[in-house]
Image (cartoon, rainbow, N blue to C red):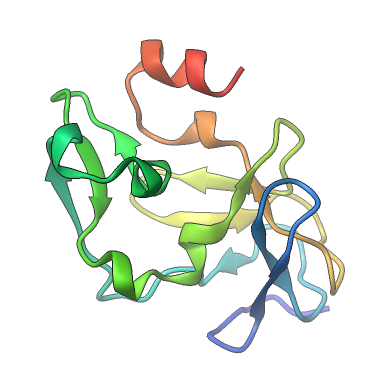
Length: 129
């Protein structure tokens, strides 16, 4: 069981949850940092009207009323493909990233509880019911 991940730890595959998902290639231990985003990953605030509807699911609602989106939709990090679950196996720590909530076995899909992300309460609760 490993306690470290890197760019060779994940793969995209069809998900039973929604579309495409992120799967771990090796066992990882609880509390392991999940390297799902490159250090140079960039985001920017955009008006909702300026983001095609098909791409809005890759953005977060921001307290400003705008969307916080990947700067380059044509260069998404693997972390952008993590699916939501109320029974997630990873947790988000603000300013630090994602960590395994428990031991995760090779082949499991990584699932996040999107409600842990820093979004305004009203649209978030309605969206993730």
